[in-house]
Every structure is written in structure tokens, then in C-alpha cells.
Length: 451
Image 1: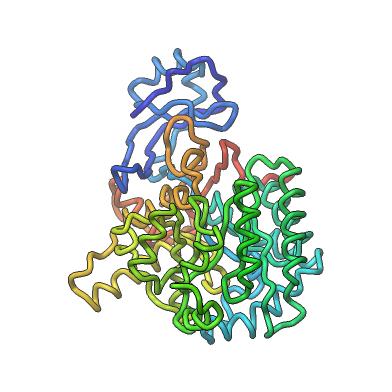
Image 2: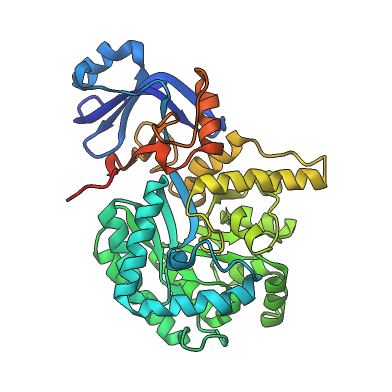
């Protein structure tokens, strides 16, 4: 428990009950009968114990009668963080999972993404994906859009309007022979990236920022990759891309970049591996490449649903963690068929158990560990952990109010259970019906406002 020394602040609201979160030291920390206050800026002003209600109310100037009391089967947890999601692929999520990666991109993905030159189509899809992910408890999303600047800017606007914390990337790709109407010249890609960054930053959205987004090495020339690295460095921006997702892709990269030592080396030479870089998948990275990730501070997004659905590979998360590489979870929709990070946690556990079946010496992930990956781990992977990821004084209040016994929900409780059991049941059995409220930076964003 902790309290802030800053008492002269306006308290927006105070909640009392069970809070669960992760810290650097503990994968799961449970705070029972806790009091948490949120100030007028949406930040956590204090965390204390219920027995100290009177003292805290006097110190922080709130009325004890105004405290929101959680019910017996409720708890607050940090908002979930999707470190890799293709907003533009939402329209066909749950279908088109019958091909490996490269064929899948050419047959399904690129033709659909080319439609986003139509801003009205983009508006329909992007509105639905932001609402769906928020309902599923994703308070922070790292989005791939498409090569279309105006539609990508629209995604940023929609995320802002609904109150979601988001990194939004206009996709860059100057190499694509499969769908010729869906690629740019290197000059166009650079110019439109500059325009996208400038216009999105000029909007001054408090929670939405641009992320430099080369799709992946096979769809970009080395000259473009180097230029994008320069743009990211000069503007101090995040970077996102894909790496070592499937073996055919890895071999293609060797052919396209014969002078590079590895897939990771290509990005490193182009200044695309920084402490603000998030690379998706990494199923087939060598230990040497993981060492380079650690040295540069770059992070990985683990996307287990997609890895399995496209038969790409199984990431050894334990090995990544042992290398002390930052790691978060991603849905990778629509390569992954679910928009929920709850699913990503479940598939992470499944994948880890498959590795244990193959090698009994493998240390299987625990549900507490994947809970941390979905929350604090994701914030660390996106270098946002000073703002969000857990319930520490001074951080933004990004949180889910979970009712495990929600009426009409998917979980039946037979007896009174301790908070750790309630959390485990929610992570394994729960869905959006159990997420009764979603807060981002202290603002309630779900249920959605009628205004």
C-alpha cells in the first residue's frame, strides 16, 4: 500500500474493494479492501487501506459517503494492452485462416487493405474495431493501419473520440508485386509518413500518438527502411514492424538482404531497433538476435493466436524472458481471430504447454505471468510504463472493473472464492460481459456515452 505526499489535489472519485495488478517484483499482487483515489487529471492520487478511510478522506478532501464500493465478486485490474493489432483487417476477422503467412497476405490481406483508400469504408471498420477492443478491455492499442494517410489519421481521430490510448501507424511498403495497386514508391512512403506524423501530432490528442511503421522487411527496400529509421530518430517516435514470423518469410529475407547477418541485423543497421521499438512475433529468432534486442531495448509482441492460426511457429516466451527482452501480448487481428487480449493470454498458456509437452524440462508459463504480460509487460514493451500498466501512485488510472458473477455472464460461481481464484476464473472463462466498466486516464469510456 502507498499514499502520495501530495495532498493538495482535487479527487475525482475513490473506489474501495479488491485491486489486482503486477509489479516488477511480483507477477500478481492482490490488494484486498483497498482504497484508490483518482485525481482530476485522471491519475492515481493515493492507494491506501480500507481501515484508513477516515484519515485518507481528511488528507485528500473527499467524502467517505462518496466512495464507490465494489461488490463481493468484483475487482479492479489494469487495462489490457494490445501491443500488435491490424485495425484494417477487422472486417474479415474469424475467416481466411487456411494459408501460411505470405500466401495469406497476398490472397486476403492486401486486397482488403487496398480498400482503405475509401475513407467511408475506413470509418466504418475503424469505429467498430475501436469499440470492440474497448469493450474487451483493451485500454491501450498499438495499431497498424494501411498505406493510406487520410484513413490512418481517421483511425487516430476515432481512438481519441472513444478515449482509447493508442499508437497509430500509417503502413509503409514500397515493394509488393502481388497486389500492385497496394504499394507506394519510396518517395511517396517517406512524404506521406512525414505528413501523417505532422498532422497527427498537430491534433494534440492527449492519448494518441504516431508510430513509424515499415510493414516488414520483405515489403520494404533497404533504402526505405533506413529513411524510416531516420524519421523515427529525428522525431523521437515509436517504431513497429514484424520479424521472424514464419520460416518461409525468414528465408525470403535472406534472399532479399544477402548482406545482412540476420533478420534482426537488417532492422538494426537501419536504426529501427530502439527502446521504443515493438516487433511482432519473433517465433524464429536466434539467441544472438535476442541478445541484440536486449542491448537495443527493443521489444517483442507475442501473438500466439496468429502464430498458431497461420501455422507460423510457437514462440518460446520463457527463453525471451530469460534473455530479459521486453515482451507484451498482441492479438494480431486478423491473423489472430480474436480481438481480445483475454484470448491472447489463453493462447499464450496453451503455446507454453505445447512446448512443455515437447520438452518436459521447459518451465510452463503461469497464469500470473501472462497476466503481467497483458498489463505491465505490455506497457513496458511500448515504453509507456511510466504512464500506465499497474496501480502505482502518479500513473494514469487505466483500469477494468470486473464482475466475475455478472448476470448472464459466462462464469458460474458455486461458492465464495478468494480474489486469486476469481482472477484465474475470469482470465480463463470470462469475456466482455464480465467487464462492466473501462477507464482510460481516469475517464469512464465503457459503457459508451450516448452523447
